[in-house]
Image: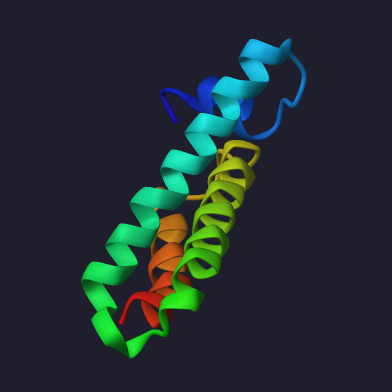
Length: 94
């Protein structure tokens, strides 16, 4: 919550010059790579390799969307958001 402006800038705002757009793309690619490595470490061979990257994208995008949703609803307790994130992510990461 302390950096909600940064989340909104990274995941909602799609304006900016070429340098800003390139920076946003790097952040997005890096997030997906980190998530893919996490998934691979958790599930190993239980997930077919071609499914790792799209699963990482789904989780990354979904969790970012949840964070943005929460920014707009400050009355929602953090525990609710964490419970939803855990419940929805757990099946994908074993």
